[in-house]
Image 1: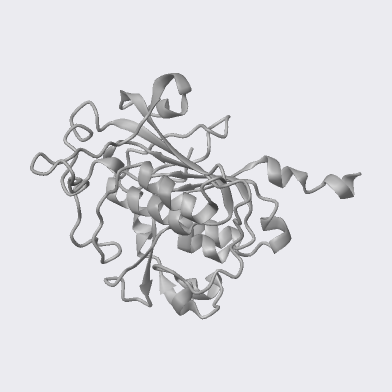
Image 2: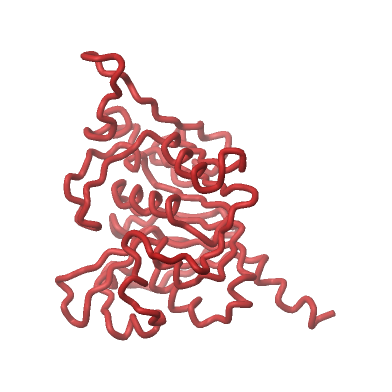
Length: 292
């Protein structure tokens, strides 16, 4: 009996990581049979930055979806990402996960404020080098998901917004949140044309007393969706595997530095939550969300 059940605990616990590099350091050394048994994974929202050798002034940006490509055997029931306090970066990370993600049936993305759906267009995104302009959500992401999984697959993207400002954790309470949907207004000049959504800052969402409201985005893949990360070439987007040429994470880490290490907490922090949905936002830095 012990031999048959000794590994069941892996599927019953939450694997919790502060950042992408720590996740890769720990999980890429596990055998595929163990990775496939992990069902609940949570990670901080900061993207991964790599610099070639000691040339730290050049930084390559990789969001979570590309790091998870190194773990193709993952088959999670839920992936949870705690966003950073930067709406543009949160939007970019979540957009990549929805368009290119694998290895999870359900995604929870939690933003500590509403700026993820209120920032103004970036003509040049410093992280990716391409423009970044918001789309009306969740309608756009639902269209993306339906093209991938099928219109009748029961896939969905649902957004919840806290009704309280600056109330950490409130968006996880069904009694303290509302469903959030963005509407596209018609221009006054020509009612048949849609206004350039996302070009300008959303004044209502970014106003005092409003921007501090947390956001929860729940993404559910289709019933029969293939979430496997195996055999997903050719690579798309800013995929590390384009240039890695089959190198393992251990090899990449030895050749590239991690300039984002300076944002890691100086003091060791220990998890203090008693429930898998418990979390707290760190005030140490605008970049780093603590998971404890």
